[in-house]
Length: 222
Image 1 (cartoon, rainbow, N blue to C red):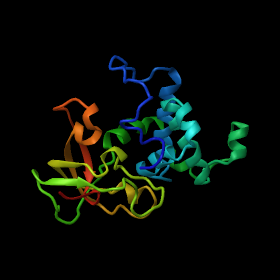
Image 2 (image 1 turned 180 degrees about the vertical axis):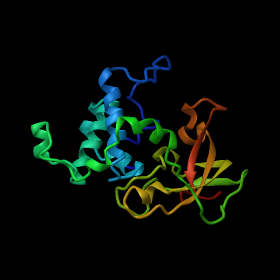
Image 3 (image 1 turned 60 degrees about the vertical axis):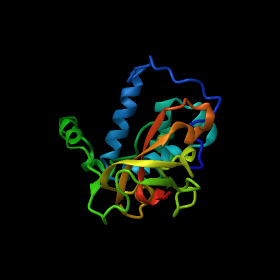
Image 4 (image 1 turned 30 degrees about the vertical axis):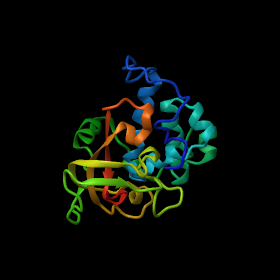
């Protein structure tokens, strides 16, 4: 990842407050989450595309926005890009007529069942290349190998690091493809354990570990 959202291990962002357990710190945060879920039900994009939309916010906006402001920023850009709403409608604060997607609106009485059904991302795919216990190296650089500047779940701090496969999750939709309308391209997905010092050097505590979910094409034998 080469965008500002890939911030793992960077200095200057402050410490994480382990006492901050707020799910919705402000009332509008609930509405922001609900609006994102309701718009997702319109079927105009998938979860990987919505993540990429948030990642594509400008560096200034990403650094200045709160968590749910980022969600609303990415959602707004997606709605306009897909022609669901126009800039003029946003400026006016109301729609211009009835949307052709109105039949897909997620009604209140359907919400519980829709959320309970979930969106499984497991798929059938070729046999896994790696087994539990295998040593693997994360691909360098940590970027989308197909789409320049595209979405990837391979964090920059893991690029080139050596770890050990500790679990095979089976095959899952590949986000680097799915985010860009290139198909689901499912791949085996693994949990890979890295020594913290392998990722961040001597500044990390000796003995600490991090486990990352890594798609097969992110890895090579080590």
